[in-house]
Every structure is written in C-alpha cells, then in structure tokens.
Image 1 (cartoon, rainbow, N blue to C red):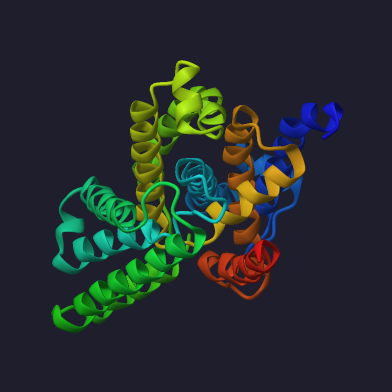
Image 2: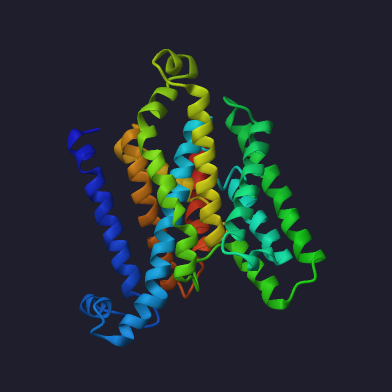
Length: 324
C-alpha cells in the first residue's frame, strides 16, 4: 500500500464523517440548508434550532456512537478469533445483547432505571460471547464459527419469541420490542446519548491495544515471546468488544453487518495494521452508520437496521464466495 495513502487514511475518514454528519443534520421532513443549520445551532432560527437540538443532533450522536462501537467490536473479534468473518452480529453477540434488553423491556425492569437496559444488554451479550467461545474455541474453522453463530442467533430468537408470546404485554410494548429487534435510531433523545456515552471510554481503552493486537496476529507463542501478556490481552479484547456491542445494542436495537463491512473495507484500503485500523474503524464505523441512516430517510423512512442488512447481506455472500 502506498505510504501516501496510509498518511491520508485518517483525514479521509474524518472528511467522510463530516460529510455524513452534515447530511444527517440537513435531510429529513424539514430540509435544512448549511446556512440554516448554522442559524439553528446558534439559535438565530428557532424552528431550525428546535429540529436540530431535539431531533437530529441526538440521533446523529447515537448513530456515530453505535457505528463506532459495532465497527470496533467487529475488528477486535476478528483479531481475537483470528478469523476475518467474525463479527458481533454473525456470532450472536448483538442478538444476545438485544435478548437481554427485550427481557428487561418485557418484565418492565427497563423502566425502573436509566442503567437497567444497558445492564441487561451487557449481561445478555456476555452470555452469548461465552457461549460462542465454548462452541468454537480459538483457531476454530470459519464454518464452525458461523454454525455456532447461526445456532446461537436461533436460540436467542426463540427467547425473544417466548417473551413476546408468554408475557402479558401491552400493544405499545410489543411494538417496542419488535422494532427493537429490527434496529433503528428514531425517537432517540439526549437521555439515550447519555446511556451510550460510555462507548467513548471503551473506545479510548482500545486505542493503546493496536500494537499488541498486531503481535497477536502472528500467533500466541510469537506474541508471548515478544513480551505480550496474551491471556490478559485476550481478556481485555473480549470484555471491551462485548461491552461496546451491548451498549450499542441497548440504545439502537439489533443492527447487523456493521462490524463485518467496515473493518473489511478499511483493511482492503489501508492495510492490516491494527494501530491504524482501530481509530479508522471508530471513525469509519460512525460515518457508515450515519450514512446508512441518511440513506434510510431517502428510501422513505427505512430503519437503519434494514439498510445495513440490505448492504451487508450481499457483502457477506461476496466474502464467502471469495474465500471459497
């Protein structure tokens, strides 16, 4: 890869994020020009300010945080399992987080505290993660990882169906759960932004792990001989990726394929060095999620989970065909 392209990676990702953010603020039921966005942000246009501060800015922040979290989680899982097809959605971790959140909604526990929903999502995601590890240990084949993910997704889907069919829920709560499973960013408030804010801390914790992850990709023995505490590194990667996925799922529902598409595209464009890929995945994931949200608005209000599935499904099939 040319050194010039490597140097321009972060500026290009930042430009993509800026353009996506501008599009997110501009497009919607009330289109806003750049001048009107500025007037709204500075409260010179009260209608634009209401739209921006109450609807579009919270939605933009949630999209950026969720995209960054899912993308970075996918990158970390691919390094952990040493398998380029590993991602939170395919392995069932996202569904585990969603199932935990759905149980919290169904039992009414989610309404008791701001922390209840993310806590339930984190518990569900950790259970799913350890189930995947139990079925497909390190170095397992791609087929075994995918089969474990399929089985786990089906099992957790059954848990969600059980909650829907056996709990006495109101029509509104049933609809809330169904839309939660599709994944979306509608009607998000600053309270949801606050709920997702720990994603920033988790992302910062990932940044120093690029060099050890590069050494881990050489093999455990090689990494250990070069001074890496492999068990501690693997535990840190597992905990961070699971928590990031769970926090993202708690505020947006189950959104798939982001952790697969973004790391793959960045690796193809800018190489496999994790020191560079981690910040790129955070910025690129945020830009991708915001872009998918804007695309969904153009497509008549499609939820972002549907947009990522429409893009990610063919991409996944292409990857499978390429590997075979």
